[in-house]
Length: 300
Ligand SMILES: NC(=O)c1ccc[n+]([C@@H]2O[C@H](COP(=O)([O-])OP(=O)(O)OC[C@H]3O[C@@H](n4cnc5c(N)ncnc54)[C@H](OP(=O)(O)O)[C@@H]3O)[C@@H](O)[C@H]2O)c1
Image (cartoon, rainbow, N blue to C red; front, side, top):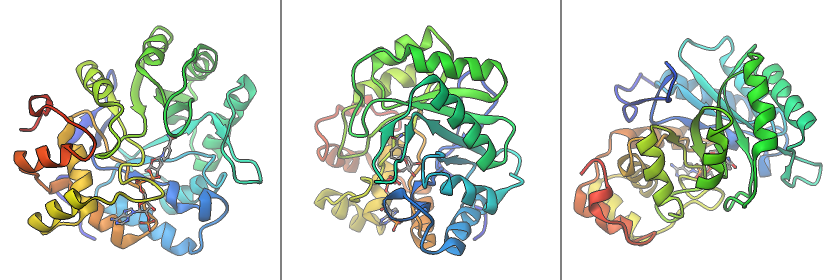
């Protein structure tokens, strides 16, 4: 695949010289079924990663608890030594027992071990960005995150981590976190149909902090909506491309990490970076996830 010109424009993480294209790639789908064990087709997984980077993707989201270990090992096999400018964002705070469940792993030792697991399996001396994942996947839970974040801030001071972010958090937790360390990104559940974070995104945009929605396409059950279908038909695009373009146009601090194990879906998703949605179409799409005032939109 030839290099694309503009993968949604670029965004510089606050207080850093780290710039990434707004269209990135989420690596979670590369592990086996239920994000556990090796993929059914290792060569295909490697090919998807290489094609993404060859097309200009310079932001890959991962975790050592995907697989566990497997996804990071595939990234290393496919891309190491990493090209200059590639930003690998990982996350810590969970583990995967043999029953394939997702369990919090937020003790001091678990966090230290997780950072070292990421370093080893990615083949790095320093991790670009580490997100502290707390809360539940469907939404944040209340409560202090001071203890685990303090551990990661310490690892940052030791030089094992360059920058920190948060995942599955609310605005109060971000405020608490900012008193402890600088944060460059927040990664929460958000897409055209799931809009709990609308106000949070606007607040983060004002502060220049990246908002990286996970499940941008709906996650394990991809989005289905007649409004997406109609918009896609009108633009000669696909519903998934419209869902991604809607996010890119929603706010300039949104960075995308759609996940796929398929080269065909990867190409389709990357093409969404250049898809322009007219204002009246955006208004119609807004209705999927609740009302949204047009004036809050940045690209209209
Ligand atoms: N912080 C957290 O707690 C958290 C939680 C979940 C995910 N994440 C991160 O967010 C990233 C994105 O989330 P995600 O991968 O779970 O969900 P997603 O990007 O919303 O959707 C992935 C699903 O959509 C399918 N898909 C992708 N492109 C498609 C297309 N063009 N047409 C039709 N189907 C398509 C994929 O299947 P195929 O493989 O068949 O394409 C997969 O089933 C993950 O990779 C991970 O890095 C973070």
